[in-house]
Image (cartoon, rainbow, N blue to C red; front, side, top):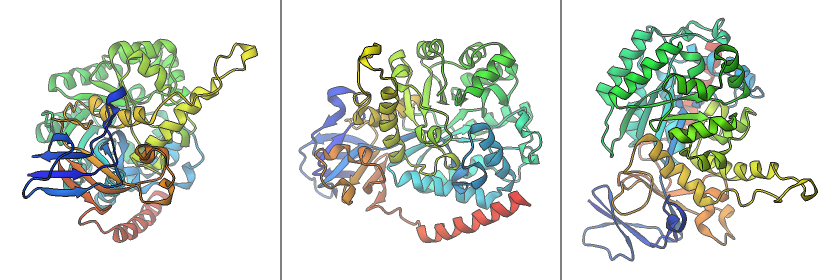
Length: 472
């Protein structure tokens, strides 16, 4: 099958420096792969997509999400809480309220929200597992992703021990046995994991929070099993100062030192957040090639802070973007996340500015991060962290994961550089088309077979059900 995207106004590639933009204006896709970029004449029987006045980006790669939280947006008890109190108030309180239909609906809503932002690949850190569950959350995530044509990386979360804040919460918070957790990882890898570069399904070892979810000896064995199976590793780390306090009190070391001691650093590992890091931790993460899923909106919503991406990338840390869960990010789409990353890295640098009379050397952070940097983090950066070498950039020979944005809303009128619109202007640009492995799965801002009005009504009913169950 051959497809030609014609007349694009601008192309951002996800690459570095001078290669970050291509003039195009045309892209030919054959059998799911980018075959040519330039001035291209249509071939006989070739499908055409007219991208006139449109901007083309690589499809986004979301490296950290909690899809089940799509039905927990703006939950009042957790709305104005910081991380630890929010965990008890919202995601933990509602865990036992989910059944198979509500979980499936939440996953579908989250995937469609991402899809409509131009996202092709989703790493979902799913931690809804407990002993004797009557439904298989892993299976549901893969089924819903496949139905929509999206690439799914299941980060198999869970815990084999409980945290103190979980002691008085529902039975659904009971930890799994270590044996069951490890056996389920092997089951999932055998059933779903595809290690090929063009894979649409991956499995990752991902205990929910390293400092709390398993005893140290088990963490080493989890790492050993992951590497034996050839899968990657993921968890939360250093989202707030509580991580520093807990690591010091329990292990007399920093969180990153704890990870190093238990074989949880390396090029096959990435962590969500990494907001509160000491300088020596940044150095260690960089030396080991351990990556970050930067989640600026969730970190802002919970008041956790702003990760220092400039220092991390300078140290050698691979950088990617994640939306985190919708219960701490009511705009869980990748365009909004990229916009926030662009603004907040500039704001972070600006906060460090000092007056010249006190030794300052710069006024603000307007030069901290470019749009091209953010696109690279959100596409090629994510593909690199997830081990998907054929995804994440627009260049000949790569899989055709391509978003074609139609900048026809007044928010884009007056732009001097149309290429930056989908990130710089905020909001959600309409999709002329989104392709995953060369297959169009969104066309003219519509997902075939998805009735958004019915989904809206189903979501409203599901929220009422979850509230009744959680408050019963």
